[in-house]
Image 1: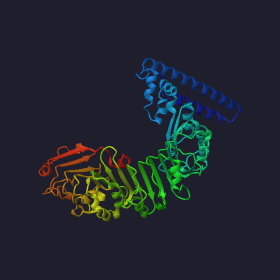
Image 2: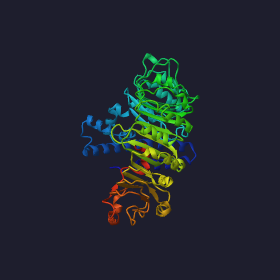
Image 3: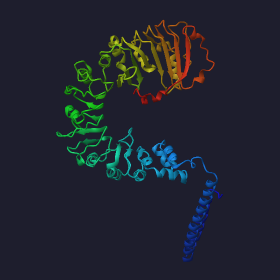
Length: 527
């Protein structure tokens, strides 16, 4: 078999010879250089042909198991690949390339962020997908405004030309304000999902051809809803801003246009008192972002917009300076079953607080960007509403802020989460000092779980002299504690650890592997 670098070596030698001849600075030298150039190209063609023939002979003598499978089976296997991996697989060999090109559906999903976006690649996927439904996502959702996409006009033109077979479109680019209007002016018989977070979407008074799309999901910077609008009963998930600049400000018009919403996200609510209308009976998930805390009080109180409706909302998410007590009161209204409270660290000044019922059809309330400094006083104000609280999960960072204000008299489960710290030694010092111990009023506590990050040291996990103070971290008032569980990324690190001191006061100590890394908490279903 020819050496793999033979072609490069021949090209380099011929190029050096060509340069040497040109330096003779004569008419004959230029002719000789031309002959050398033609000879070099001919030689490279022969080498490549010989290499291809040898590779083909070797592949014929050493067939792989994939090549022996029927093309239908190989195509089915390729469908498990991610969209970007389909392109890589088509470059492995001729057989794989033939398999990839034989199925148009393999090229019907294009999902690349702006850092790797290539117009030619998008055009290739669109061409190879032939006439099947397209699902395209272009741009970076984390930095949509800081990473402008190249060849925006060519990209928009390609998307508009293939709008008739678009099933899903996510487009993080706002440099062409008229893109959304031009898109909706096209026939969209297959469009089910449209995500344009940087565009003002103007709904048409009449759809192209008289038939509206079968939209299920719609997300936009804002919505412009005309007075006479064709309702879209197929839309079950909607996200948009609510302000005078981007509209809509009329909630009634919003619900008239989308009468069967199941999930609704409204951002930048400036005047919550303008929402006296009944919510759709189909609504199950509601996300609200308000600028003023007083808006949340109005929204959540029994006489407010949400509280006064008997719609069965299973999931409520609130952004901004949220008031904790109205959220808890709204969550537990009419319920006497046990519930779960989770308090996670978001940033140095913010937290995420979640309330959740266990079981099928569980209801949840999530407070995002909650101010940490107001947590102790708000928990104290909400102490009477915590009566049926059964389980508490809290990061140690928030726990040290709450002091001893967490008093859950019926809670039987407590999980303390130790997040990654920039300086593990500083975290250890905090956990070791008596000043950082936290007293918890949980007289019925039965299970105590410590979920630890990879950087958290375990030196603090040493038993003290009483059941009320089993380690250097937490002091609690419970005579019923039966089990301690230490959840860590690497349970083998505890092989040979002496747990006899703990087993004097509890029935069992268990070390288990963390079900998810703590830095991925925000990606879990709860958040």
